[in-house]
Length: 423
Image 1 (cartoon, rainbow, N blue to C red):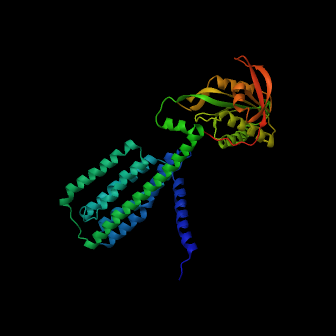
Image 2: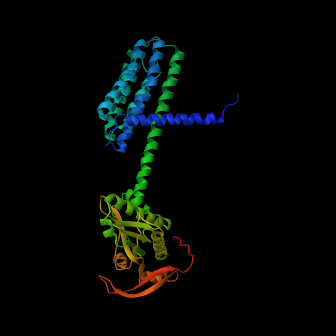
Image 3: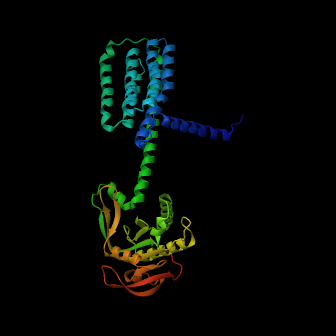
């Protein structure tokens, strides 16, 4: 009869679903709301291995009983009895330290006792290899400094076994039986060790990718790489950069009439919209301060069109704000842009941020704060760089706090279709 291809596909899928269900069930045993992701993974691995070995210990017990060595059959039977009891106690007490200590102790001692009862290394089909699960598992579920005692214990048992070997009495099991048990012991131990490491590495990679993504959401890629490499001071002078500040008009009185949750939802809606635009143009969001949004172009990656692409983003921001409501409200933004040299770097040891400093940053902030609702106000520094690409209206001069009178322009629109590229 021809096999059903659909059934062949469903069988692996069904096995994966059952394994996922087993993992979810293991997560619930002894789980605590305050568990970190690392603690939860340690609990999950300990439970999965401890309970996952029960079918094998039951099988070994049955094999040795059938082979006429009941004393040897009792030893794996002890594991089959004690592990469910220890797991039930752990589910009640949530004491991970006691649970994993008892399980690691059984991993270490029971294979050794089984080897002694069968007459040594060869006669027991090297069953002591199962004790290798103890230091291997300790590396995955214990603090690194606590694992030394388990590998030392494993090596000590090997040495003691070699000393006792001449004095051990073998029950005289058939040669073929010893050979096939050797194949089972070594083969299953390697398979179980591989599955454990495969699962652990997969989980570690998952958490590492999440951490990497979180770090990249906070810092530019170049800066995060420098921090991971151990560079303590991160600062650079950028001679050609542009800075944008965007601030919602009349936001404070509007926020006063909103609940905290609605206010946060509104800001999140606005800034997610701006984030998409900034990411699409390959620029760097620096930070948000209340309802103010700060973007930079030309840092940390230099680009020749830093001013042009930033004005392009500003126009897209205006269009996005004009075309939709945020939290049921129509909003208007003042946008200010300036260009010039800046210093960029990371400040702080905890909750650090990538930030910019310099007169160019201060003037960009003044362009926003002294601008008019719904306008993009730029300085001469920026105007000289973008006038060929955008229609700009001169607005005379204004007195800027901390500086002399400055010429300003308002960006009205584009002079034609243009595609900007990072250089």
